[in-house]
Image: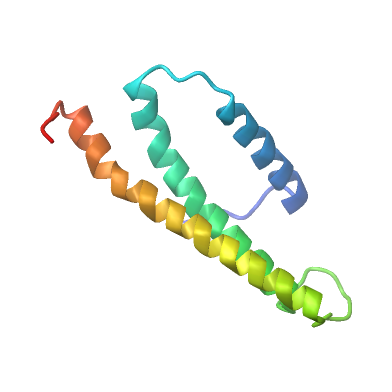
Length: 114
């Protein structure tokens, strides 16, 4: 279960960018780090997929926090489609990472059989 957001979405997105940049430049200390980080990244990718899906729905005229006219122009529709595709891609990445979890567990248990 996800708790109610405490940060504005723009602040959370900026924080995500900073954290991703930090992780991209991080030095990893072997398999212990891989085993600790991959499950976290899998859950993060799943949440990113949800966030992108929510943005797609908002761009496509879904519920919005502010008042305004819904713009269903071709550009907005295309944006919604791109965000939807990005959501699907993030979800597929989460699926791929999830598939690695049993391998990580077997390595943690000392099972190195192929």
